[in-house]
Amino acid sequence: MQIITIDGPASSGKGTVAKLIAKKLGFHYLESGAIYRVVALITIKEAIDSSDIDSILTLIDNMELRFIDGSVLVDNLDVTDGLRAEAVGMMASTVAKNDVIRKRLLDFQREFATEPGLVTDGRDMGSVVFPNAHLKIFLTASPTVRAKRRYEQLKHNINVSLDNILADIIARDKQDTERANAPLKYDSSFILIDNDNMTIDETVQCIISLLNSKHNI
Ligand code: DC
Image (cartoon, rainbow, N blue to C red; front, side, top):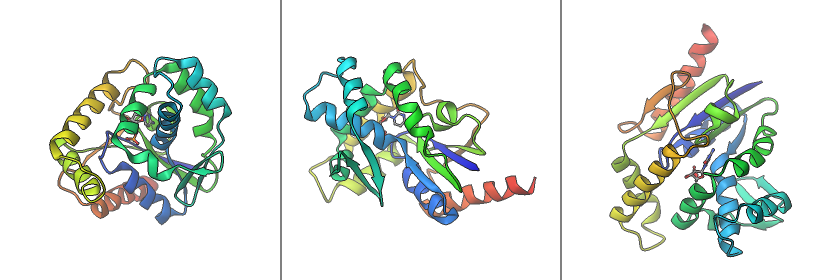
């Protein structure tokens, strides 16, 4: 069974790219960030302090999380729309710093690796969750380009400014790369793709070509 991991920072396009590749190949898809975002959303809703790890672990143990046709259901409630807010992303990044929380979520993530294969994206999918994946991509782009992409996605919905988004991206990069546990980190086991000057389709095509060339080796 093949596993393709795409690690990378916020708004590098990893989720969109991973989803398209999964569809092309007929593989399962796991957006690991959505798991951390769900934990963050409930933490915020239940007014739990981010330092209260025991309460967050209880929350994790008691929630029933399911991904169905692009929707995220927690205890049968569709929470998909609430997950995208900047505040939820920031809280996700904060709870994700804790090693016990990360370990508690490991098995859940690994259960997605079933036939015919899995495409998954996140900060540590190739480095920690699936270190022996068939193809490990590290997808990145400059903070400015990522902020512009995020701004284009959000500007129609909410009152957001490009400056604020850029500041959030820089803060989240710092928190995700400097944390002690499973930080976002490139090493030579990954293939690095900087997609500053690439469209989503070009990025997908590049990864499919890499996969095909691996098969020919
Ligand atoms: O990919 P995302 O922006 O939806 O992820 C939200 C936060 O969750 C991210 O800032 C850090 C955390 N996260 C993580 O620590 N490990 C992952 N595999 C995925 C997300």
